[in-house]
Amino acid sequence: MNKTSASGAQTVLVTGATSGIGAAVARQFADAGHRVFGTSRNPETVADPIPGVTYVRLDNADLATAQTCADAVGPVDILINNAGESHAGAFEETPLDEIERIFAVNVFGPLALTQAVLPGMRERRRGTVVMVGSMLSSFPIAFRSTYAATKSALKAYAFALRREVAPYGVRMISVEPGTIATGIGERRTVHIAEDSPYADEYEIVATTTAQNERKGISAETMAEQIVAAALADNPKPFYARGNRAAVVFALRRLAPRQLVLDLSAKVHGLPKVRP
Image (cartoon, rainbow, N blue to C red; front, side, top):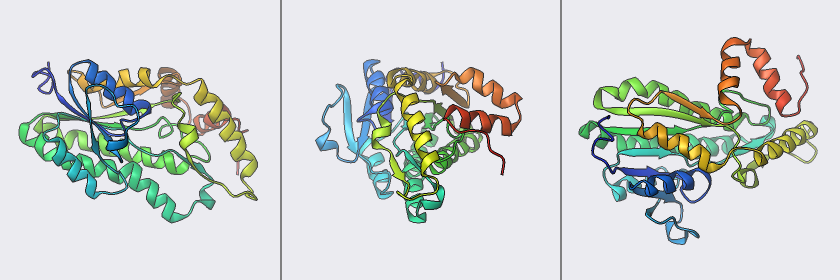
């Protein structure tokens, strides 16, 4: 049993705990008897609070709230960096300030919170940080470039930090969900002009994405993977679930990169095209 789990019940901080994967993760930790804090931009107005979860304020776009959140929670044993914003659209038509905003929400916010809890973990010589990414990082597709880039950044931080913090008993883990049936598509930020030259192909990707999401695995199933990774005695650096992960990651290792990109495009309805 590792140092983090040796003391039994642990203090877990789950970001974005009011819906989707975050809510499922918070519920599973609470049901297992852990002390769980879930973040929300407006914790006093959470519509369906989970029994056993204490809600605290965090706004990933406001980096100052990371430290106030960490101070409110106190010592954290497990941090699940799950909160983020889905994004789609034509890269050419996405303003740079919007790209900066998505990076603030999906990357800088989680990094600020990680920095806020790491000193305590290092001093206690135990802790676990899970970066929840997306399989779009490993299998990027057209019209999801900004979102894929933010999730790739989180994965790179998790991999690089793993050795950096390991001497202090802190474990860094990257988890990539595949397509999840959480209704996230209804909340996705989209940048595509009505007269866009990319409009037709964007609509193809948007339609197939919606279809795939309706058939995706449940938030509860993905949460089981995240919770299991966080509590593992010897967690791997990387976990993926959904979209036939075992098969497609094997293909990614063996097949030429262009073939993998072509297949990823085909799954989303786009034909193979060479510039």
